[in-house]
Image (cartoon, rainbow, N blue to C red):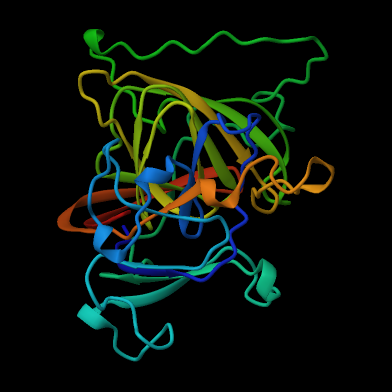
Length: 325
């Protein structure tokens, strides 16, 4: 439902992630209020001309550096040369700011991004309640959550079988395993698992309750966000920050089975771990995280936006789509 020709990310995005290894640690991708992650250094986008070019793994171009300030545009001149919100934007676009923190936060912890859209994101029909499926957020509801002191282990979730006509997208295959706290009080977290064998199609999801850390175990995900596209494979991680709309596709029709984990953080944002006693070169490096370059689509269709807010799920439909969603 939202589309960009360009974006200016002037935020310090301490969007997460700690990985357990050293030089051989898994690659990471992150979608924050500007989307980031990590890949091989040779796959970096080094100039605006790289926008839209495909790299070896089939994804788009990326910019690297956790907490950096980025400007990226899909069409030349889409981003204003001066200021952020001119009276008239290039290409008749609409300027919008997406805030990751209160706008009064000090500079070193202020998170915000300017996006230049074909249509304003506020143009949509009213949201209406819908089923949350197997996603749980209310840990005080005895019918949904059970407190049990026993040790527990979980077998891998079965992957949908396309041969039997079973078609499950990322949202339909999302199942909550455990959690604590309260998304309305912005305290706590939830752990989910997902399986899917179908793309979301003309539908996107936005989580207003917290950041989502996606860890694929089997299969590759093609994630389209408001900031660009991310190709996410096993041994990589991706963070979609609170409030960012995204769509998950299955890029490999010959091997559509996917499965993985999702960690949802209600409080604050995921961030890089501090250094301290382990020294200056330990844990994750800021340069290992990538932000995708700007991308867009402009087409007419019936498009559905699904939102999770306060643990409740609602949706609205629009007659015109703008992607990234």
